[in-house]
Image 1 (cartoon, rainbow, N blue to C red):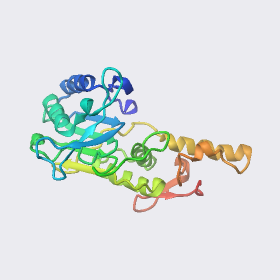
Image 2: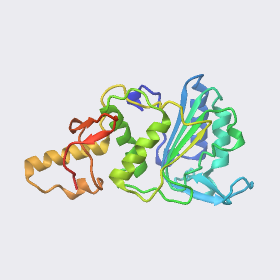
Image 3: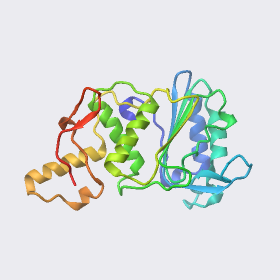
Image 4: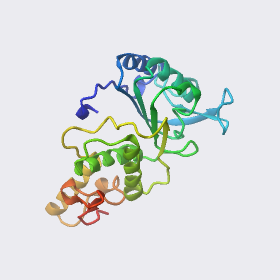
Length: 262
């Protein structure tokens, strides 16, 4: 986000209480104006809770698993999807675009964007999996997060300067299917449509973290022989290609021009 000249506020680990998260959402939301984009990114645990108001077809609310003032987590300090939607819509004006990115379990409808409370907003939610699924981890971050970062890398490699959230979602799915082959279904919800511009494309060159790890592994082969340290390859289930070895075909799709790294 810093590479995109975005203003970034962060909470980590024990800082992420409902009170702190709520305060920060209100602060950032108050700073957003027309044509700005309010982005909420969450990487952590997610859960299901029994529905309290009968608005869920499956009888379950989705929730972000935050912590209490002692750093402990329990359902008493989780933030339900209903309360999250109320918090964001009461903090961010409807003329501001809203993007929710949730890399956690049970997150398919964690923003509840199809509920009436979002009426009049342009909001999109990308999440790591469906409500009934869990989101996998690479050991160095979530599969969804790394799929998204590699998708951004791919767009920058093809010199794409703008894209919609829907296009970024489609590219993220391609990466997940080709690189991670995960069982989770990365999900997208949109209101009113998928045409919102993706707000976080770096202005300069960008190389995804796993792409950098792949490059280092390839360089290690050249220095030390044919074996690659398993600690490096554990986070790369199949193939990551260095940007300089990729080109675009006539359809604009990435053509992989190097050998698989397994």
